[in-house]
Each structure stands twice: as C-alpha cells, then as structure tokens.
Image: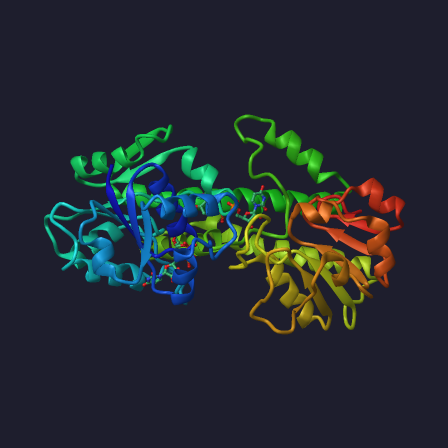
Length: 425
Ligand code: UDX
Ligand code: UDX
C-alpha cells in the first residue's frame, strides 16, 4: 500500500482522500480552509455527498486518513501527491491555474525523491509540462489522471469508473499510478499527458453538447405539441446514441460543464481554431433557461411583473448541496429581473449569495401565496409532495415542472395548471 497526499479537500479531494484510504493506503489531505479542515478532522463531511461520510469516519478511526494545514507533514513522505485544488474560469473563459501552479511550487522543496505528482483537477492541455517546470525536480514526475466523478454519485463512480485515464511521457510513472487503482475494475488507458488532459475536456464538452441538443429537442416538442419524454426515449434507444444524458432540464450547470466548455473553447481559440459545436452548446444552454421563463410567463397569462414564484430546487442537480453555476439560481435571478418575488426551497441549501432570493423552511412553506410553482431540481421529495396540499397553499394554480418529477395525472386531478418542459402545450 502507498502513502498518498491530497492537496485541496473539496468535493473531489475529500472523495479521493477517503476512498484511497478505504483501499488500504495511508492518506494525508492538505486543506487551507479552516472551517472545512476542522469539520473533516471531526469526521463530519462539510459537503453533501451520499455515502462518503462513512468512509471518512472509517479512514480516520483506522488511522489511515488525516487532514492537515501543514503541507510539509502532508507531503514529505508521500509516494503520490494528488492536486485537487480549484481551476476556476478567468474572464476570457480560460482556466485559472494559479492554485495548481502555487501547489507545485510549494511542493518543490518538500516531496521526497521519486514522488509522483498527479493532476486530478481539470487543467488546460499542456499543464503537466508547466507543472514539471514549476516543481523543477527532475526526480519527480508529473502525471495527469483526470477525475470523472459526478457529484451525488462520487463514491459509486470512484469504485466503478467507465475508465481510468493516465497521461505521462514516462511509462514507469504512469504504471505506478495505475497500481493505485489495482483494486478497481475498469479499463486503464495510458497515453501522453496532453491527450489525457484533452480526454477530460472532450468528455465533458461532448456531454454538454448532448444535453444542449436534448434540451433543444424538448423546446421544439413544446412548440410542436410532441412529447419530449417519448421522443428522447425513442432517440436514446438507438445504441449509437445511448439513453444516458437524455433527461431534459432547465439547462446544465455545476462546477465542471460550464467551466470546462468555456476553457476548451478558449484553448482552441488560442490555436485559431473555433469549436463551433462547443460554443453553440454554451449559447444554447442560456436559451434553455430563457425557455423556462417563457413557459412560466405563458402559464401566468403573459405577465411576470409582481408575481410571487415558488421555486423548488436551487442546486445544479439533485443529490448535491452544490449551487455552483446552478441553472436554478440563474433562473431565479432572471425572474427577479422580471420583477417577480422569488421564494425558494431546496433540501440542501440554507443560503445563496443573492439575498433577494428568499429561502423557505420547507417545500410547502415555500408555496404559500405563490402565483406559480416552478420545479427546477429533481429532488425525490418534490415527487412525493401531495398536490392538493400544495395547491391549497398557493394563490394560483400554475405549476411548471422542468425535470419531469411530478405525476401529471395526480397534479391535474388536484386542479393544477401543469406544464411539463418538453410537453407543455
Ligand atoms: C476541483 C476543481 O475545481 C476542478 O477543476 C477539478 O476538476 C476538481 O477539483 P472541487 O473539488 O469541486 O473541484 O472544488 P472545491 O470543492 O472548491 O475544492 C477545492 C478545495 O481546495 C477547497 O476545499 C479549497 O479550500 C482547497 N484549496 C484551494 C486548497 O487547499 N489550496 C488552494 O490553494 C486552493
Ligand atoms: C460532471 C461529469 O459528469 C463528471 O464526469 C465530472 O467530470 C464532473 O462533472 P457533475 O457536474 O457532478 O459531473 O454532474 P452531471 O451528473 O454530469 O450533470 C451535469 C449537469 O447536467 C447538471 O446540471 C445536470 O442536471 C445536467 N443533466 C445531466 C441533465 O440535465 N440531464 C441529464 O440527463 C444529465
């Protein structure tokens, strides 16, 4: 078993640290955020990630997992150092590498001879070479090993990945990284570091393109009076297309797709190459949100100004507490701009940066006196709500379901003027 250091204990870093510890390795995770650090040390996961807390506590109690703000003690005897710090978007869309490069610089005088530095964070193509320059240690190899973990199912994805991608010009270093995954059943693809970095961007961008297309077809279904659920089922059953990632919604969001599509597009432009499909997917994703506003306006007889809108769901999808680039928050902001009053509820969100978005204590409280109810995230508890109770609490009867989670027969029987995205005629 190995000694592993993880730099940055966020969504990706905490998962990486706790699950490598569960495979028998000794893991020390470095984190700069004091509140996050204290919480992790106490065995309390500071974010919502189903199933992870148990692994965190098990790792700590078995003495295989620790969290620290002392980089030297975390990294000095590590065989592998995973970099899991953020790579947010800069103004031109490109990825901000300052945290990653700073981590490499700090590690230069600390890591032992022969240690392997691994980029888990999504980094621009060519970053491995930049990191090698930054760490300036010929005895230390830098290897790309992108993460493909979905929030909400990160534990399952860690143990059951579709593939493990490892990129390095040094075959021995790549094979050492592959050994870390010996207990995980998955195809391992070893390639050069640039190709590995590009696989990550290409995968996320393709999925974003697929979703933008799916949502465009759903919008067309709204115009035509066709049923998007059936159309997309029929489309996904073609094995060349596939039924995964065919659920309509209010647009794609989260900490990866928006940032990664922008970064790939910016990277291509620096080579005077236009990735028109990626750019179109980004633009189309804004239209997905505007379309939700359009359906809502139509349902309210053309008037949004002064309306009280109850919003169910603020996270970018269910089973996470993450609101980064959430389409739900963006839609709330668009509603505020239209002069609406917005009262929201999300089982995992107690505050958002915009104070104008009110947060209720429960799904039913949120609907009190509302002219319309807008469902933006597919939390199971929204499917379980009792339509008659909700409609009694509301002032109006307009209900818009952008995730297909409400039972249409029940809601209509209770008197809802229900519109389902992709089937809203
Ligand atoms: C991060 C990257 O944003 C993403 O590009 C990559 O694909 C995976 O890693 P995530 O884990 O979701 O994603 O980010 P976040 O939850 O913000 O965690 C990053 C952690 O690093 C935070 O806890 C932050 O406090 C910490 N950090 C940040 C450091 O420890 N050192 C730093 O210099 C900067
Ligand atoms: C993504 C990648 O899937 C994962 O491999 C890793 O690279 C990190 O980024 P994540 O952002 O956690 O994972 O969420 P994901 O499940 O991919 O969903 C992204 C967005 O697409 C969400 O807003 C989600 O609601 C939306 N989505 C997804 C749909 O609207 N319909 C679908 O069928 C699937």
